[in-house]
Length: 91
Image (cartoon, rainbow, N blue to C red):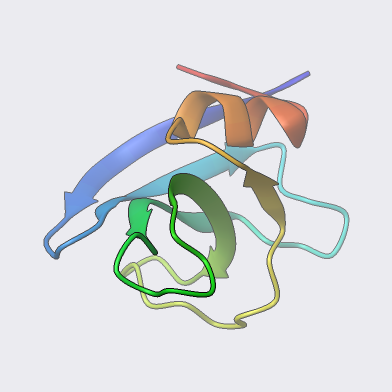
């Protein structure tokens, strides 16, 4: 299992943070942006529910997403769980 070290929180309406991965992913990705959000579909008649999710995206060292293809996902708010599913423990 690898280690994900939190570098910093990123401002915004979602709970976002930049992490460094050790070792990097097989494709060389060293940094990831993890974003957790509450989704409110309660006001949309065809959906009518609330949910949460956490997604992981490849990023550069400044916290800018380099590709919007998800590397990890859990259907609730937890940076640690999304990174754990990828094989990384948060340091």
